[in-house]
Image 1 (cartoon, rainbow, N blue to C red):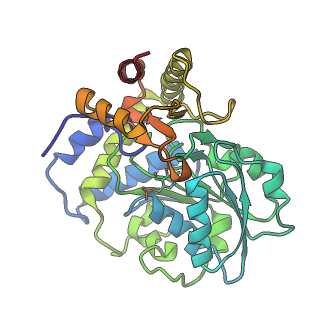
Image 2 (cartoon, helix red, strand yellow):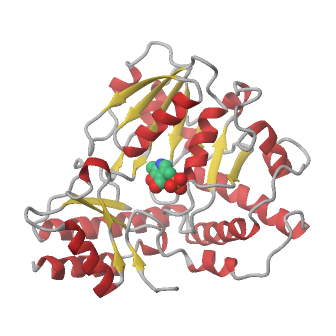
Image 3 (cartoon, rainbow, N blue to C red):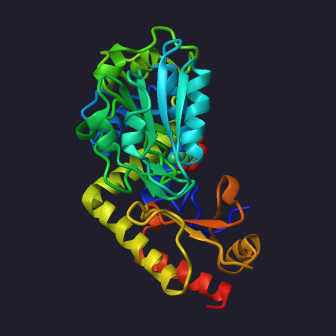
Amino acid sequence: MITERFLFGPGPSNPYPEATAALGLPLLGHLDPAFLEIMDETCEMLRTVWGTDNARTLPISATGSAGMEAAFVNTVHPGDVAVVAVNGLFGKRMCDVASRAGAEVVAVEHDWGQPVDVERVLAAHPAPAIIAAVHAETSTGVRSDIAALGAGKGDALLITDAVTSIAGIELRADDWGIDVGYAGTQKCLGVAPGLAPFTINDRAFARRVERPQSWYLDLGLLGGYVGEASGSGGRTYHHTAPVAMVASLHGGLTRVLEEGLPAVWARHEEAGRLLQDGLEEIGLELFAAKGSRLPELTTVKVPEGVDSAAVRRQLLERHNIEIGAGAGAYASTVWRIGLMGHNARPDAAMLVLAALKEALRR
Ligand code: PLP
């Protein structure tokens, strides 16, 4: 059954219409020259949204977590030390993925809701092979300073999770010293879930694991999959490209770049500010630390005595609005409200605010 809903949760939001329209086009063969052109243009547009010149920038054919996996299996040599900043669920997941890839993980724990403490992370080990952090923690609604990590990383490779930041807030992979980055399509890029925009620079590629444990995510092989755009020269069959998803990503990226990245960032900023100011005006308390709040993902404490699930259900059933529950230990005490991609609009912010006001009788 197809239902029209406003999805304000932290998961897939209402996509950009251009991304949905692309899904309705006739399917091209994955080796059709017309599709290869779409793939090349997609990689080129991904470079722009990543803020990178990296030749090896591509959409990996799986969700954001596969991007995370690709980042670690291709860079962790047995016993390498990986310092991982943990200020939420996805930093935690990075630790698990890194240790499965064979890293000796040094986890730098933070209170949830706080940004990454750059000094503590940089001081956690004298010579790590890898430093890893999440730019925009979707579990807590917090933004961390990746540029400062990049400036202090020394010889380490910097792996960055940009799943919830790409095309929502400022992201400059090259300027900030990001060596390996992965993202997702379903957040601010405003496309359905299913691909992981990925980028790796020459420095990290030169240090890569020659034969990673994952065949599918081996970046040495994936270079051929995207052909010359990857700098590898020539295109070889690796796996069948998910043509509809890539076309949809192409549609979403075209929309974002036509609007212009600074304008897109400003739109997310405005919508998030309207929502956060409005929530405070009705007496609610925001969860993420002041000064580090993401505009695209707002975390708010569930007021004392309010049944979190009942309010979420009311919003869904009465207004077709989905907001997210909290993550981990905060499942019933925090709400997460996403205003991402097509939903990052003042009218959407006001709509969710009005619905919450009604549900809370404020
Ligand atoms: N990293 C962050 C910050 C995320 O928000 C998510 C998903 O929400 C992931 C990683 C994992 O991405 P996916 O669920 O697309 O595999």
